[in-house]
Image (tube, rainbow, N blue to C red; front, side, top):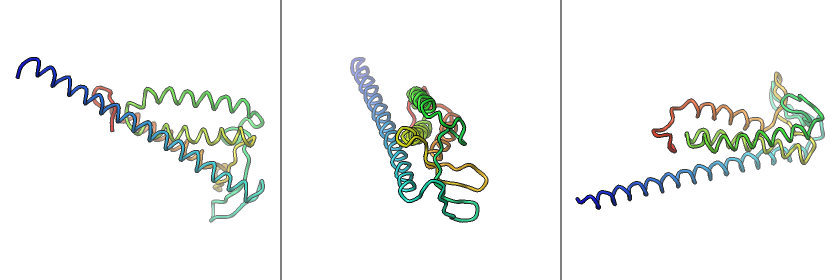
Length: 179
């Protein structure tokens, strides 16, 4: 094989490898968008059902230790900082921007980081939508020994855990995209 043929073969392999990495990245970000959209849709649908079928303070006993209750949380986690919707909304937007910037760099690490980030983003957008559209977040899952929460909160916590798990995984060789 001549030197020219070896260079052409090497270049072809490098180009094919680069195309594969671009396709993997595109699939990863498509999965990100789909997860964000699913979390947002499910969260908003559940909250709409609660708002349409229950008045504020209504409670439905599911089983010992768990009720469905309609509560409007005008603060942040656990009702902290009530009545400061504009400040909380601005902080949420800043946090979402931070998540997006971090994911742009960390998303190359592995698929878990992207999946967790998508859950975080979808949950945050769900609660932000509530704040902007309804003046507070509709919480409805009420365990006996914990403050009420909603589907977006579940996605946020699950997303944070998954991101941490993803970041504890060894980076793929060369820091390139992993499956």
